[in-house]
Image 1 (cartoon, one colour):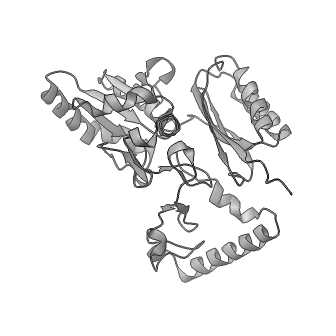
Image 2 (cartoon, rainbow, N blue to C red):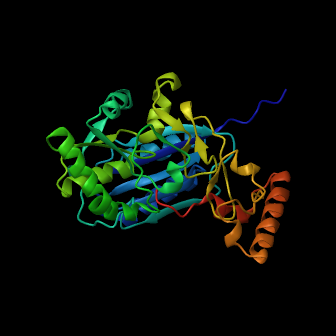
Length: 325
């Protein structure tokens, strides 16, 4: 009897720590990833590292060891999960101005971030009526799942978050101050912890001091908190071919529209406007017949390649989502 192939190990990681020579770090990480057959994306900036990679357990261990050896990276926000199929088809190690783009260059999350809150303590914090809970992710992510009672800024990009804070958010914080008789208490969360950590540094720069962020993000919470005790509702969108995960980081029920790269729920796939590999309700009207025909042909070619056990190069565009993590 032939044993099934071992699952791929997926590592989502980040750390805010100063990197002076970005080129040297990029080249070193690219080399160790390539040598160990690890694929995915790593971003290198002066403020730190961020990325998601996948490969064999041994290969991932080699890459993590190389990161830990970098000055300031002895600690790393790191979450492991598995995937039955390769989540990434190629490797990209890139130099960026920020490891998560907010457009606020003077922030220093390494020294100015808010207070970490563990997954085990998160429920009590967000259940407190005096706490304002804010989702720092984008609108399409929040539509897949969110914490019960969280405020949704409905941003299209993390770059929009500062404008929301200075507008709607400012009124919200002032309202919170009136209710509590003192400064508001704010709890923020995101997928893996990086955006909410940077967001706390931004709020502190804006004069909101009592700010907290979920350590390890939603992924750590879904991994550590039993479903029966959970305040999470729905699934968590992830930036790879799994599309979404649930409690225990099990692969979820959402799929990805290849026309617009948006997550599609099981109910959404019942729509007559949903065509696998081509379009969904969100994008059907925005695509020409020529575009839909091209998507259909791409989907056909990917299916042929998959049946032959080879990767189709056109699938790269579907895997590497051009969105902020």
